[in-house]
Amino acid sequence: MKFRIVGDQKPITGHISMPGDKSIAHRGTLFSALAKGKTTLHNFPTGIDNLTSLAMVESLGVGLMPQPKGVLKLRSPGSGRLTPSTQTFDCLNSGTTARILGGLLVGQQLQGIIVGDSSLSQRPMDRIATPLQDMGALIRAEGRNGTLPLRVENADLVGTELRLEVASAQVKTAVLLAGLGAQGITRVSEPGQSRDHSERMLREMGAPIRFGPGYAEVTGPFHNFRPLTLHIPGDPSSAAFFAVLAALRPESDLFIENILLSPTRAGYLRVLQRMGAQIEVRNARTQSGEQIGDIRVQGSRLQATEITPDEIPGLIDELPILAVAMSLAQGTSAVHGAKELRYKESDRIKAVVKGLRDFGVKADEAMDGYVIEGSESLQSAEPDPQKDHRLVMAFTIAAALARGASLIQHADAAGISYPDFSDDLANLGIAIRIYQGN
Image (cartoon, rainbow, N blue to C red; front, side, top):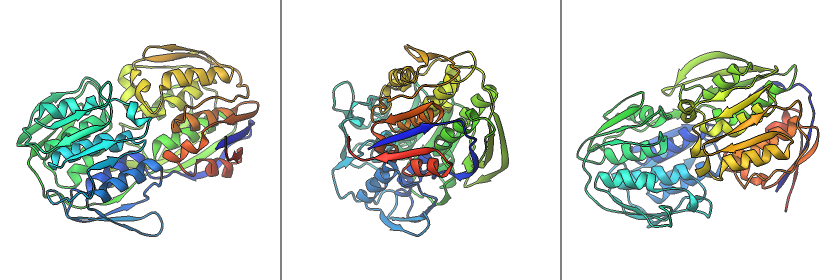
């Protein structure tokens, strides 16, 4: 599938809501397996990755009861009572599912093999296997260079103090889930503050957890998890595409409603404001243990900025669309300390730089980031998003800001996280058409 976009500079105005946050939905789904009884998830997103997590808990013996209007109910026998219907868990393209599931299987003393598609099978899995092995887990990444398949066997676990070399919410979550099945205290610390949705959700579920900036610890074994009724806020990573589009279109005035505003996820807003974007937060409140609110974005002229290593954990998923903002900012911008981008669904450093060059932007790679010289305008292009959903959407926004007609290949990849992306763009007046086939 392809997107054909004709760019212009018309203002972006109106109100828009985002699908439910992908990260929270993953955790709400996978953690539901631990809680005996009925978990209810409101505003559940229907991207392929989140549906993959649903398939995994169903394989563990959780019953699924879809309801109208984006509500999902799940019924589980609870921690210590899960009865897998398979020994092979296919996580398709979802790295979050694979890594969190690894910790879940280890903590529940379950056996299985975690596999994925060709893209996921190239992503590093030793980063969860190694700390779990330190706890006594029988888990190993059997692929070349520590990749999938990931084999898990039954083993007794002992609480351990672990320090991660790279801040990672996925690895941290895997360790905490294993720790809740281990004897004693498991403490995990990391060099930066990664997103803390797992900690907040486990606390809501009654787990013995303590956490703060850069650390979390649990005491196990624990099995009496409370089921949740969870209202999933709008996904900030999805909102970032529209925020950048509105910020770069003169006279725009866009309201994005019910967005997750967790400090560990709002880094992209702080960067855009630093660049001069007119962004106002309204109706801030707490819901299901998370900070949410509405944001208003108005068109403005952006200035170059530098993103430092300590900021990366809070905006890792938004870096591709922030690169688009940098491409039209005055001056030279840079991203440092983002080597993790090379291990996503694609090598996002290489692909972002090449894509921006296709749009006529001067951009250069570094080992852990890139340097982007802002342009007055973008030219139409046919960039290669490497079948990576975030690059498909970032390049689509670049195309909407460019002069002339652009073509985005592998556009169906957007459905991994945001199936309605093209429809929502069209509803805001973007000239976008879909072509099936190659």
